[in-house]
Amino acid sequence: MTSFLAPDSPSPGDSALEAQIRRAEPCLWINPACTATPEAGAVTALQIDAAVQRFARAQNLLQQVFPALRETGGRIASPLLRASALQQALGLNEDEGQLWTQCDHLLPVAGSVKARGAMHEVLEFAEGLAVAHGLIDAHSDLAPLADAPARALFAQHEIVVGSTGNLGMGVGLIATALGFRARVHMSQDAKAWKKARLRAHGVQVVEHEGDYERAVHAGREAAARDPACHFVDDEQSRSLLLGYSAAAADLQTQLHQAGVRVDAAHPLFVYLPCGVGGAPGGIALGLRERLGAHVHCFFVEPVQSPCMLVQLRAGMAQHPSVYDFGLNNRTEADGLAVPRASLLAAALMRERLAGVYTVTDDALFAHLARAHAAEGLRLEPSAAAGLAGPLRLVRSAAGRAWLAEQGLLSQLPQATHLAWTTGGALLPDAEFAQFLERGEAVIHRQAQGEPHDKH
Ligand SMILES: *Cc1c(COP(=O)(O)O)cnc(C)c1O
Image 1 (cartoon, helix red, strand yellow):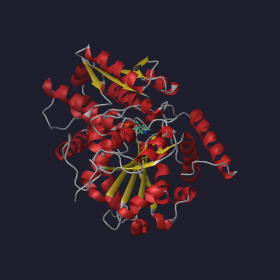
Image 2 (tube, protein in one colour; image 1 turned 90 degrees about the vertical axis):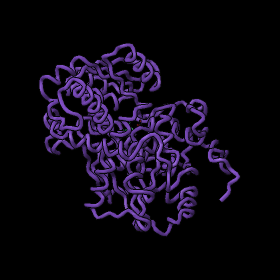
Image 3 (cartoon, helix red, strand yellow; image 1 turned 45 degrees about the horizontal axis):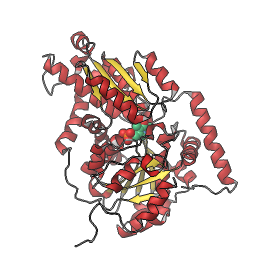
Image 4 (cartoon, protein in one colour; image 1 turned 180 degrees about the horizontal axis):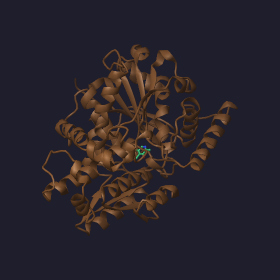
């Protein structure tokens, strides 16, 4: 088939979409480059398997080091929840599919999806050091990393990261638990309670005036000057991305146990909150690798921070920032407040991601309140973003056009919608109460008939 459009050139209707992006209006972008047969790219299936294996070899170690992981036998895993009451609250009809949530907000240790990536990268670094110093053999069980010789070795090293909050929490808490020193460079939007919690665990917190990018760059530069430092690079790290990708192996087992099929007649739509792109990118990569082309992944971003949307639209020859579109990158979804996407994640998503949609902060808070009322979920604003996905897909003109073109409209009654709830378990009560109050106020205003971003 010949196409007159180069793969990265704008499709018809694209200028209308760009206007929506610039006006910070919620929109849905369908990725024209998504294909059933993507090129392998920078990460191989072998590496994805190796991450799953590393987590398995770490189970004995993690049970010893983290009391919270004793119950799970050292597995970093979260529940898969059939959210029928929330489905009703969202107004998604039964014949439009079934709503489930992957409850990464309950992940132990970090209370967010970051537990997966941070744990993997810190483990890989620790394992490399221990192998290099003859403390363990390569590919062996990691239990000896809890012993005194390994801890003495780790105490001579520092793990550094730049973060808006949750990655710093994950890396800081995990690194110090293994005996490393840890330093977290935080952006201005990082919440005060996150900084306080890290300091209480002996993590050095360095505060920066600027945004996420500034914090990451400051951390990268400081770490580069010190050979005993390992920098966890949220914008470029393959190890982080691979840690996230291991989530797919668990989900596959959980879907099987729940009797949920994924095939041509039973499509799976996954809605993943996106910041820099590493967490959702890793998860989507793993899912496409394990479950194939019948899993359709969508990223969700705040209307003021749609960095992956502008990146994938622009193509890989450019690296645009949301500021270039007149946006301000301000959102209460601190986990998603990123102005420029990871090129590693973007390159992997170019042919694997079905699309990206954006949401207002009001919609995030309303969904946060609905998730609490209907299912008792305790989410942070970033983590509620995925809940806007199902209605956006099945009710919007762009979503329905795509479903029709893919031959999926008639399969909707057997479809599964999976919203990835990415964080919130560690939120202090007072913080969560404020979020709930704001969400309830939004819902109340909407019920009064105020024009709103319904989805
Ligand atoms: C970090 C984070 C995300 C997004 O992950 P990225 O790797 O930045 O794309 C989503 N939700 C929460 C709660 C997060 O902390």
